[in-house]
Image (cartoon, rainbow, N blue to C red; front, top):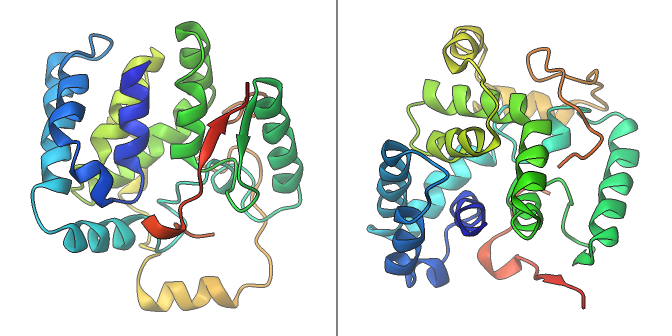
Length: 233
């Protein structure tokens, strides 16, 4: 499903290669009939918001949004297991799923990085894509709600994934819950995070999520450090 690939790229660190492909990406978005017209427009607007201006500014915005604090982490298991030992086994299980499908990644990349997981899902049959997204729908909803609270256009990516999944997540209710959260991306809160020796979250930490980890889906690297993803023959 090409629109999943596009969402994966837009959710990743902005880079010059993608900036050169804006017309092609916009065409894929506009031809995606699995999402509503207004959602396609939101994705097109985000595409131009990221890539019409200075790339360094877009990269700085991205880093400030996703690389500071844990609440907007793009690592799925951060929202399920935190830093508990269960996270390690979940990583191993997910790598096993990748290997079963002939999908290999560089050892330096974390398998639960959402853009990477979307890259994997994009090559599966449509039904399996929807099942994979529905498994983590509550996490996607919480991320959307938190981004909307910060008035970020990146929320459209998660809303589009939810639309494709077919799962009805009440974003309004989630926004009410996250509106009272203390920001974790301030210098003071970031210092506290780095000082913690260990943090343990129970399964379903994302606001009491009951999300399944049966097919679960480093801080963000710069474009130069990004590792290749390939499908084995």
